[in-house]
Image (cartoon, one colour):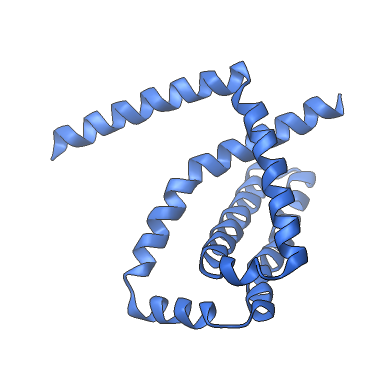
Length: 160
């Protein structure tokens, strides 16, 4: 029973991650156009591994209270508000952490325990992702998503 519950939770997390990843990349590309952002990223990348680790953890820790508020709202009978707060905090924290990881990964990987944990986590996550990608539910979702993407691309190409 726990395995199925865990799989369902991971299924939802992976769907959200895949749905928002292209948005993260677009937003990241938008911000990269600003000189101040580029300078800030260069400044961060030049820091020591320990400072990079602290900077990487900041958005994760800052978003944690908002996630708790989201869960609290859901528990208090406000499921849509709670879900909105939780997902917004998750998306914001993930975006910032992913951007900081991209900027500082080389330095972070020089910290042995971080590199070990990172590799173990990525291996575990890839295993879960492969398991979920093999399910009939995910494959049905993927067919729907691919058809939707193709239709949207066709519509937007016609408008140009």
